[in-house]
Length: 247
Ligand SMILES: NC(=O)c1ccc[n+]([C@@H]2O[C@H](COP(=O)([O-])OP(=O)(O)OC[C@H]3O[C@@H](n4cnc5c(N)ncnc54)[C@H](O)[C@@H]3O)[C@@H](O)[C@H]2O)c1
Image (cartoon, rainbow, N blue to C red; front, side, top):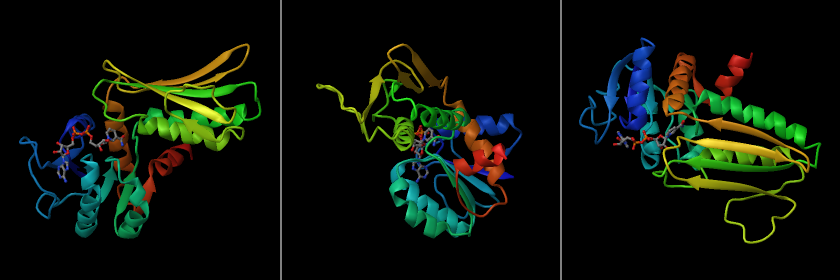
């Protein structure tokens, strides 16, 4: 399997390292800015002989990049975020022309964590004494809050716990309402991403926590997903890949 890496930034470089470790062939690195990339543009030349492109570029480039991959018939692992509101457009564009797998978080651990939180939430839905809440911590360079991952965890809590209808991300200067869940964000230091869900009762606390040690988890998940996608056609999410492992 010949791999191209589009976006030779922090993630692109980690992905190349993981491919090397796994003995996979990276035939092309593409970046419009990074001098050390082999190519500066996504085109016929940089995609020549490529089976799967792993894209971690910029949100505003995502749609144009996808249309180029479709045009050149190259399968895609889409790690770039910020285009999910265009999912319908992308689904129509991809059809069954290429294999396309996307995720807002490629870390295998986080995807397992999502499933643990969902299972726990289903349990706590039956035990109203346990009040759910969520906090996340990220490094001091992160530009947004809450994290996309926290939003995904929050959505799971709200889907599964019937007595909760709304997530509150802002600072609370009032008592929290009974049907609200507080999602808090902290910024500082070098955290690569810590997410913690707590279910708190009058007598105890159950905490489910995921801590990323580095960005490697995202890269490993993306490369594993590329190997899974090879030879498939159509649009897939990371859930399809995790489901295939679950059997
Ligand atoms: N899905 C996940 O698991 C996951 C994990 C981490 C980061 N991300 C996302 O991946 C993206 C990249 O993150 P990063 O930390 O590597 O960013 P980065 O800024 O370090 O690297 C992005 C690189 O892409 C290049 N680039 C942008 N548009 C391009 C284009 N059209 N053609 C060629 N090169 C282009 C830039 O020059 C830059 O070098 C972001 O959207 C981020 O949110 C996703």
